Image 1 (cartoon, protein in one colour):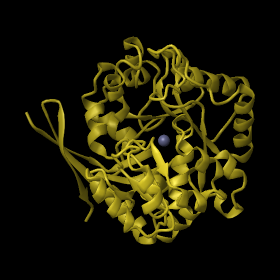
Image 2 (tube, rainbow, N blue to C red):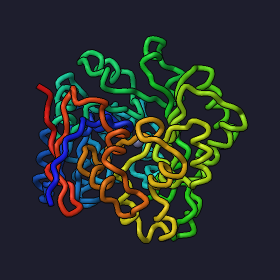
Image 3 (tube, rainbow, N blue to C red):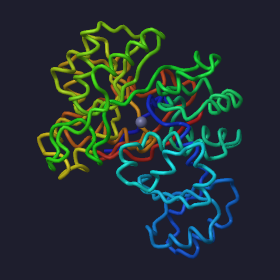
Length: 400
Ligand SMILES: [Zn+2]
């Protein structure tokens, strides 16, 4: 039976606004399967340094990329593999030496994806028109009204959002190092600090016990206890919130222990992702008032990462029922939802929330709305249908 639903627009609590804005107007070659055509399209580009996405030809044309093309950074659609020609390197080396020297080093990229998220928006020229088009696209195609930018590349973006009138729709988070040199006038526009406690599952850097390949087991801890204590205390002294990227229970526990032992009081302490949080640690987090900011989309990783993580481990992914029914987390109060841009929009999140791979990941529509949607339909709404456990026909209905 087909059922029709209507819910408020999304408030995406974790995405990378500036990064996706920069990527949106890059030349996209995903559908160009002929090398000659691809090279010709790049030759037409005339920015200082051009950025090209969706390259499908691997290393095959490296010589020609050097000799025939203007300054260019080329990446495939995974955003993990990059080619930068010498003309581009010469233009960027002074400002971004570390990235330029490591851009073709796969291992370095895996460990520094977040430097790349900040880097691309800085080399791409972005106009006010691009910003308008992006917000329009996010609203019409992805049902998103408000969003949070979890890693600001530089202050130009704050100026752009302000000038174009969208600043009230983007909440901005910044890394601690950049905050320390941030001009005073921007400081009150920053929601808080973003810190990274571990990596991601594909490169084996998320701090999880449960990798099939034992070389990775345990992942990595990016902070020593001492460093983490210092950064949290700095945030406390500035009166700023902290959003800590932590997928794995090992680093979630590290964070919780330090907050408890040092009695750290922040306006808000958020854990981003928290995909592999154990019931014991979840109870502690709840008691300490820690907000969990999670991606419903990633429930499908319980299928995608078969073979990478053990079956036992995959069952622990996104344990929403445990968090709500046992630990007492309340969607919209201390449990909030987002996309991380993978992908944006209501469809994938609704599918994975209402009809997830595992019963332990299931959300009711009311829980989804409380944790992911705007408070009212004043700005518009989302209509969609469900039929045979499939979410279909997801559309934005704009407010009149
Ligand atoms: Zn993110």
